[in-house]
Length: 321
Image 1 (cartoon, rainbow, N blue to C red):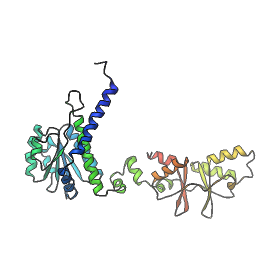
Image 2 (spheres, rainbow, N blue to C red):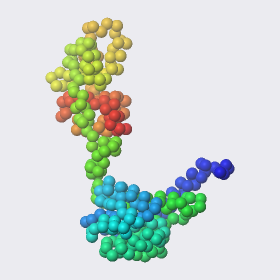
Image 3 (tube, helix red, strand yellow):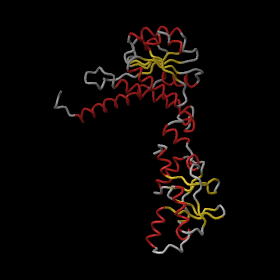
Image 4 (cartoon, helix red, strand yellow):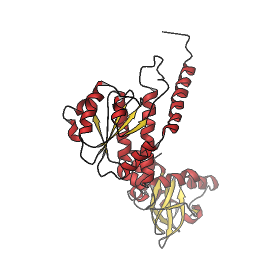
């Protein structure tokens, strides 16, 4: 083990090398790239991505990105393809083969079979003179100056560049298709990301009931309402109109000001003009309003009428942060 290696400098040089090669892709966006995007946009089938080794792993990530942004895609391992997986390919599909050298034995065996299918073949390749590039209909140039690996062997810079090219393809397709955040939500129903895009305020506040007191309610009634619903607040209403809100903080301030609270009523304690949000708004928007106003609750309304309370903890429990 070498003890005189500057770890920070080594990491920084890795970033610099990979970043420089990613930026160099800008000069490699040519007519082939444009035609590939245009052909995928009119494709009746799917985009089939194939590769071997680390390129296969990158292919799988690109497939995931395409699928999640509105372009049907599927991964086919180059080694498995000639052992039955060629059946994945349908007549309206487009195939993208990913390879740094474009000359690996598996690719050389596979390409003639791919050509026999009659499908458009795209080479995402680091060597424009390679076998894969020469056989392809279009070339996406992902050549690099060198790998970040000190031996210039382990796929590092090359896979980063391939990944960036895949992201650029997905972004171009997504933008041309006007793929919206609502479309994105349809493909991401699970996890925090999906919840940010589809979970509504009402989905959370409806679970709590309607903590409320009248304007003339005494302190005991107010405390019972706050305690019962465990939202740290209750709303003061009169004939379905929201007059104000009483929070735990309002109770503490009341106790600091008054030694005798027996004659106090809700209107003496409440804060007027509470922050509200409509029940059909996104829960993520509720979180934004809470942060913006440094509060833990929002009064939920339905067409202007009182419909409940949403608490910061409701949102955090869903993983929306």
